[in-house]
Length: 250
Image (tube, helix red, strand yellow):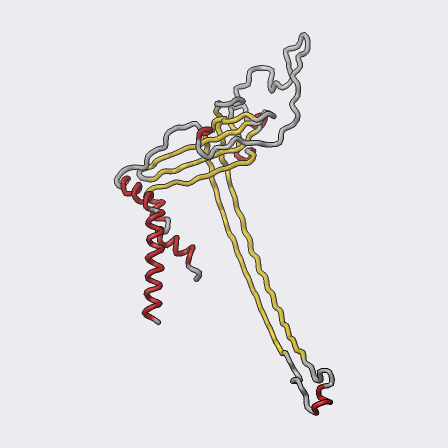
């Protein structure tokens, strides 16, 4: 039995390694072909032509008809009397100031105790003891005791800070005048690539006069900061270890 159990474990491990090899084969080949070379910068593409790109659809107010008044230089819908240099149409650029300072401390504790006792019995069933002179059934049919205790504790301490600037391009103009923006920045230092991605919906009134906007004023904001390269590879567990962490029940 011990020999058979060892064979089964070996077969399971071999199967898992085969799956890992098939799923990560292409990635491994690409990484092997890049040994000794710096990470390649991606080409500048139109975000709207990306395979997973979808136009943003949000609830819109009823359109307001534009009206002109006689002997007036002002019209409805104008944001300023003179020309506005801020981004306001598709293809315009604006600078997003990413300023994230997040701190969180949580400490939770839950205690639970429960004790259950069940005791049931039948001393006489339909007068059976009178007919036979003996007790037909035992005095106690069921006796059960149960006790459970639970004590759970959890602590979370997190501190994150990200301060940087990134230029974003207006990719879509919503019917109510809000702008959908998206920006991507790649910085390569030696053999490490750092990426910063910002996307969301901004209101033209929130854009400053110097054509900048704070990340806290971006609705549906999507901000990602990370990278890849030699240092990131060392910090990540190997493929086999990641598969074992997912599949092993202990």
